[in-house]
Image (cartoon, rainbow, N blue to C red; front, top):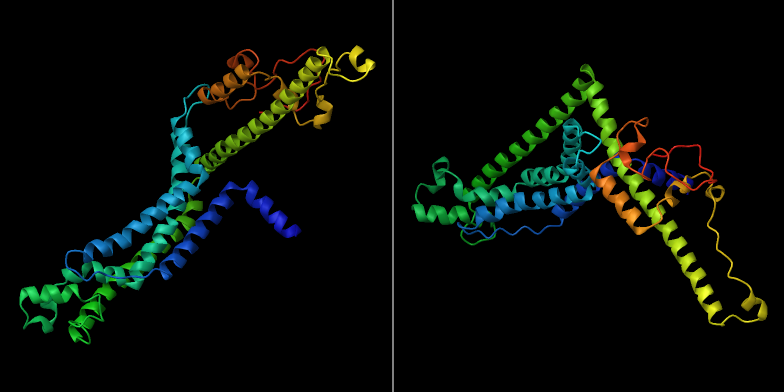
Length: 344
């Protein structure tokens, strides 16, 4: 059980590992989907190419879109591209690196489908059976052009009475399957060679720019995650304090209407519900969150985060943020003990 917990924590902390896992799952689902698909070519001259090419290209397009939707970095990349510059300039190199990473993972499942379809050959035979040159086969010498086109359209349907046990059908089918498998193996070899060269030649060049872009792309992703988690933490704490204030005000109202039982209850004032101090936080920095204590402040904070991301310099002037929104030292009531750790 501990091993599974450690593995889950690793995938939870590593966004890149999660995306690689999703990529592998999509590729495995693609293999399963193709193996369970019932292929039925219409064997009509007008529709063979449409059906074959549609089955060859439409599922990869759907899988590509699913890969983009499943990858969290797609949204992060678009947000980084479209966000206002504010106090942090945008680096096009980081956006290009994130785009490359997203596209590489999203293209894995579509390429698996296309390679399986080409190596199997059924889609290719259905799509291009009517486009075969009859002069390459001697069996069509005694047929009229219309008969040749009808015969070629029936090639994918080996059980059809017109082409059943016909040597010409077998010859055309073998010819198209050879072309399809040749294309499939060529693409596979090309992808392997490109991956091999990229893997082996990358250490031969300067890695400074690559490391910088990889670091800052991970930073953008983690920063957004931490901001969402901090917002959830603040919303929970803010809701908790609002509920406590509601119960305190209701107690005062009930006491004013004489609904409290006992003389002591009627004579005593409603005790104030004290909010937890920072010592109860275990030094987690919730004192910074409690400085934002109204709807207007929350809306202003969120709009400021969107329109003006904090500069990537912890020594930057707090005046960039305006009153009460400094990322270094927020204004708190006198006597409040702040944590010695600065949270960004």
